[in-house]
Amino acid sequence: MSALQRAGHQTVVMSRSSGVDLVAGQGIDRALADVDAVIDVTNTLIADDDAAREFFSNATGNLLEAEERAGVAHHVLLSILGVDRVHGNAHYVGKRLQEHLVQTGPVPYTIVRAAQFHDFAAMVVSWTRQAETAVIPPLLVQPVAVSDVADVVATSAVSPARFGTIDLAGPGPQDLVDMARRTLTRRGESLTLIPSWQGGPFGIEMAGDVLLPGPDALLAATTFDAWLETEEATSSG
Image 1 (tube, rainbow, N blue to C red):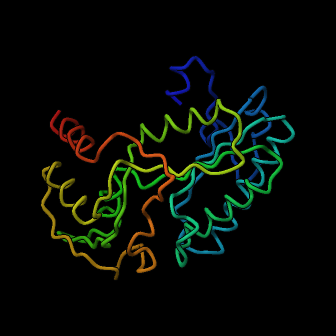
Image 2 (image 1 turned 45 degrees about the vertical axis):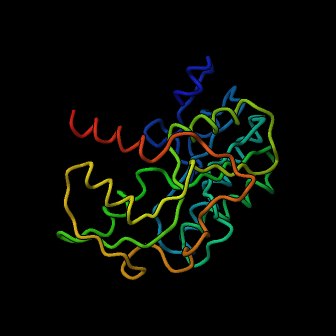
């Protein structure tokens, strides 16, 4: 939102706190009055395939129908790099349905498939931590800065619809276990990390280069090392 505001665009926040409930279909028409483009970052932590499909079917369906009524010219969806290559994960099942609804819906669209954010390893630690240990799957990722994703999404929103996807990743691949270890060190925390596909939220279907960008992907500039320096400044200040 700040990226759009810096460029002089007016923004409207659609959230439950502002009276908008996408799943229930409440408050959407009012929020979309005079809106030219929608940036859809809808997400859920639901871990069941059917529940994930139901969530995105309702939320995305209601939003697209309201956009058509309001004459919205561009729907920009934030999705996940490799979402079409990962099976057996409920979140990816839901996001694939969301993409399908956008691609077959009534509103011109652009889909930005972003790699995992720089704080992804720390998030996985928070999900699996038990006492002084945490299970980390040995994923190979190419993490990207949230600020870089925001800039690409904002630029897409004020550009003509692509009717296609943009793959976006950081400048280089990283091992998730190493990312977790380095992040914890920067934060002054000491945990025993257990590299394993067992006991965590991700399975062996994500092994190898499944989550890495292809040759045509857009590569953002901010490195994981640069992000770590920011983390150190934040934690120490």
